[in-house]
Length: 408
Image 1 (cartoon, rainbow, N blue to C red):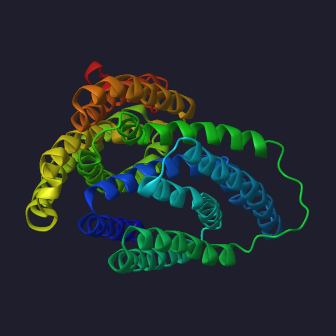
Image 2 (tube, rainbow, N blue to C red):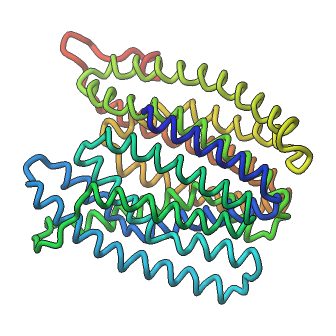
Image 3 (cartoon, helix red, strand yellow):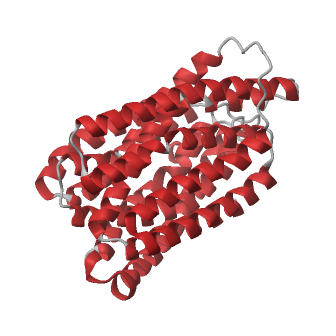
């Protein structure tokens, strides 16, 4: 958790510095490219993180087996991610994107193999429970990336920034590979290894596409890049505060798993945790809005006029998320995985169906308002699933059941 907080802080500081040093149009192109790169990386990983986490965390598997499984997965990943990267470059070329736009998109397409390998090695080391190494290494890698990219940008402009980014991503993969020590020994894969990877790929792809639907829609609608820069910088505040608050979810999931045999206590804890996060979320949102307003006025200047107001709208989305985040963690804790996947499908579809006309109508404000609509839809669906699943939980011995008030 400490490492995650530190990384979030470093990443946030890095983005603010980049936004300060880059022209808004170039900053917008970088944020759009990151959105496409995130989706391409999910495709490049090929869902292999799920079977690696599942089987390499199994204490019955020998260290040699785990390293051999990782070796097979990395070979598969190498072929898949290289193909995705080449396909992305081909699409960029055929779409006629040239100049700075083509250069920035191509630079992020080239990062896909290294980003995919990093994702797989991180999951493997998590399965091995090497958390201390992960904590220190990721903070050091993030610091190195911040220094290199800011220096590259300062001395050589956007071209230096892109070269430094590619170098940082590649360099960050090396210590993870050395720590993982993948093996080339022949090994029999578990029977459902590939099947688990396919299901994981589908779920992660839907989730990631939904997460970046707003930036893709703004790109497709040819929205003024100066305005996209304001919006995309506003989303950084949202993701930063959501990432920190998401640590509460990581604690809540196993907590609610342990309450599955006591429906009354489960409901009481769900209510208590949710109210607590709603109150904490409101206070955090006020603080983030104040920070955004201060940065707009004293650091970023008129180039990012309207940032404070945009962050305020996005903080409303964050506050709505706080109202169902614990319910989502509880849903995962009691094993409602399939329902969670369908919720992701519905919300992603909503993001595109509502987002496209809204973006065409009022630009970046349409994208922001769409995020609020998606959050409301998510809240309704998550609470419906949780209410249905909780009704199936057993009542602890000596209790007569839930009261109507508790059930509601």
